[in-house]
Image (tube, rainbow, N blue to C red):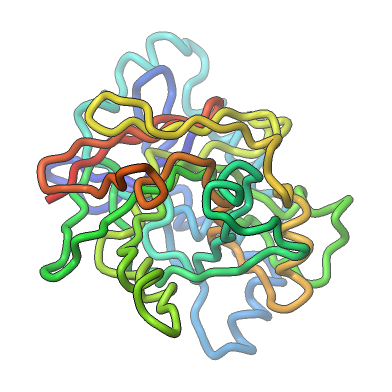
Length: 312
């Protein structure tokens, strides 16, 4: 399934399932979906309130959530599937947000592709290099990334992003993918002058400015991506392909990353784990290629989706 967060011109923000380029609204159903006992206990301990709706509500419903949603979709489109889908709003007619518009954490991994590590002149790391992006940096697919005043070294990084679907702490690598809800496409936009030109490096700041995390267009559920290490990752800038890699070349696989991070912090439903970028970023080209207002980007991960956005 493909899950989206969206809005029609006259509606509140809604959640939907994409069916043949149409959108089935599941917002009301989600608001009535029970939260799991584990999620209730977690929020009580933290002094927070469980999500009342949206994809985060679905992710908070526990291991039965996927089967419950599939059953609801089947019932909603029964008995005449073709006609039922035709009657739904067109995907092209709605405004998309990032599938998880405000995740609790966005955890990145630096230089996780062998070819990218090579182009930076750094030997492969023995353990993952963890980086963070602030949740406030998330932007919708199709929205413009605004280059802040004073930033001249704006750069792109096409990445496979993992959406966490369950509370994960000290998980075994062999079981790590069971804690994944699905996948999306993410651009890890970075202001390189704050990452490379100052000491000490301000990497989190460089990657966390407003709109620096375009994400989408949807969450593809885990069952539709049997092997996250069998995907192509690409980025086009103004029609020219700048990046093309394969997730098999990751130094640390998705399951290895989930297991590693969970040793030190609890991964929570809706957290985003973005898995690194292949070679070809602007900063290490000769000469460097930095993003300019008016530039158009398209980022794609096979089996997950394609996302476009502009630079303003």
